[in-house]
Length: 290
Image (cartoon, rainbow, N blue to C red; front, side, top):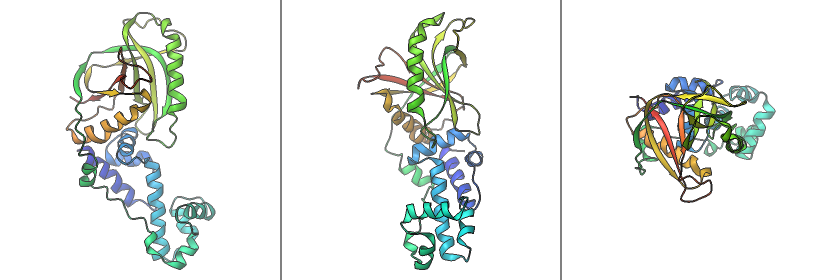
């Protein structure tokens, strides 16, 4: 199934279950993707986290109930995902500037938040003007050694990249000389899922080695399997790499006939990399099913 259709399946599941608790992992299951990959694609497409979208849709659904049902406000609050009427009222007032009781009296239908038309035609439209093409390469098996951490990416409301990854890289660069049998040249960033039903990720700042029998204290190794990759060049400051990743997931991957393996994405930092230069280059590659 095409990625655009998978996203649509997830949206349809949300719309059909607005009166119930909706887990992010189940949305991804309905779409046939891991949680991280669904959230990554959704955020790249909409610039909105999946959790925020679900919350806004359930709040919009409450407007319809206030207008067209006899349900008590507390019951509407509970079916909208709020623990009590007070928290529902605060959220409602923050969005619409009036409390739900007053909205029910006014019956102002113009406040209703209509469903965003997330259909295949719309999804293609917002991505059709980009045509960057990657290099399709076959990566040999690699063993990397370095420091690792866990983090939440931009597709999560818990996003903590800025607090986590720069520190990891600073620590790694200060200790890279400790790694034995390192192959001179590139440093690598490895981004991988911990498991399918979470948006928490694992990240390595590492270097390739010929032998990983002796690993410095506090470091770890990871094996990168041989596979085909789509490799994109990010030009400019490293802090803006998410723009490139958004393009990869929201445009190229969705409009190609290729499928992500679910394996780790790779960042490659070579001789052309400089952390603050506008002419800096980083290779960002995603693994493809053969």
